[in-house]
Length: 319
Ligand code: A3P
Image 1 (cartoon, rainbow, N blue to C red):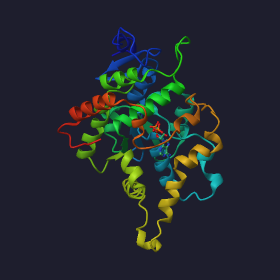
Image 2 (spheres, protein in one colour; image 1 turned 120 degrees about the vertical axis):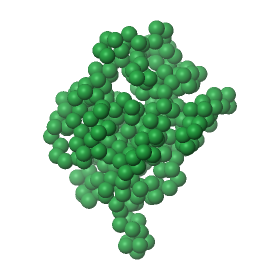
Image 3 (cartoon, rainbow, N blue to C red; image 1 turned 45 degrees about the vertical axis):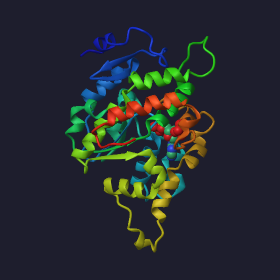
Image 4 (cartoon, protein in one colour; image 1 turned 120 degrees about the horizontal axis):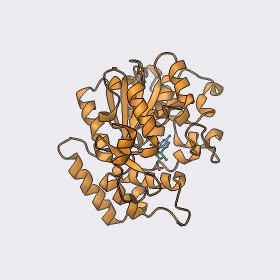
């Protein structure tokens, strides 16, 4: 299908919450029209390597944290602070989102010039990944999050980064955000179908597809980071080897922490990323589990919960 044909499928009426951005549907999912060209190129031209690690996520589910954890696990023996590229570059430049930035010179250079396995990211659902990736044997790590917290995090993020109608005042109405989330008409949506596509694949191929939850990572970060490191083929030594001290694990967690990353000069004061054109600071907010309670009415929460229950029925996944 051509990009023009895909755009033809765009909703005819303005979609609340996204009314300044045209979005269109492909293979059951919605995508920002202005990113279609890059996504189509990624799907047809990307050449994966079996050593690549592909992080996958629906937006606002903990992508940046997972990028940091994977990067810091893979580079945990670079000990000098000045060797840490994260002090100079935002994570979204270090780990590019391929469906969004595939056609940029920066990403093309990175793909061509990095030796060995590369750490990459996409928001595409599993079913929309390039065929080449699905057959490459590269490792896929997916992170997801409670749907209500995802929705609220998205609302904050898009209030910061999306262009608005110049006559509009105040934030986007939350009602519109909930409507958009629940109808699934939002970029990379519907949320539940996107997440379930990875959940199902992780059950079929647990050695190649790891499925993580933001809440588990908050509750027991050491356990989750050990699991992640083993999956990536870089296991941490057992605790007993260090005399009970998880020094290496703690260092990775600290290097990847919201508190540390937010305070790095490169991520402070609205520095705009050359690649994303989004201020680096907008990726870091509170990182609190259950923050939705401060923003959603009981009716809104009930609507999202009912939808989640319906969509996850029979999958064995709970969110
Ligand atoms: P909140 O908006 O709830 O604070 P993504 O990285 O997928 O865009 O997700 C963004 C969410 O992850 C935001 O949640 C953000 O604050 C949180 N986040 C970003 N970096 C993090 C980190 N290093 N550790 C934990 N949470 C992080």
